[in-house]
Length: 168
Image (tube, rainbow, N blue to C red; front, side, top):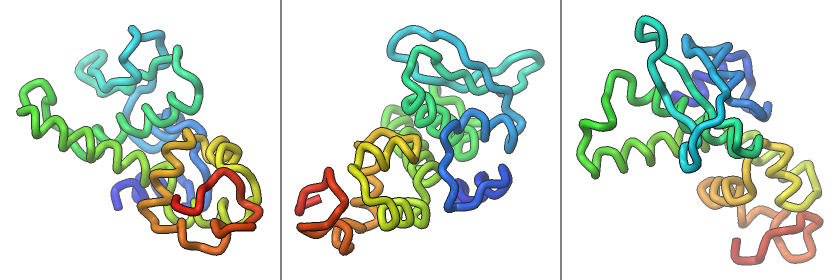
């Protein structure tokens, strides 16, 4: 629900791919967006800059697809966990917040209507569909399973959609 609201606030319909979630953050939120080289292992983060204004910082050392997912994940933290401090949270609470931010990112980048349309209309390998959607193939596969699309005709044996097994 929050992901679709953010999409609408940014003027994006559910059928439009988001190839740069950092741009969406810039247009649809009060976040400042910085693209900077960060240490290995840090994909992105939320920070406070000048007078405590919130900022989204994305690691430019990552491939574009990973930057997109990281920006969407950090947007999830900003939307869902505003005013909380992750360092103070218990380990279980931190895990829950990370899971929620991942869910938000999946729903933001891969709304069901978009995934359905791309897979039904585009007769292409999964890697090409994922690239068109701006996400890694594993991310798309996870969303296909969540949406229970694996039983649809375009995944059956002999289908022109390639890159999926019969047990997807």
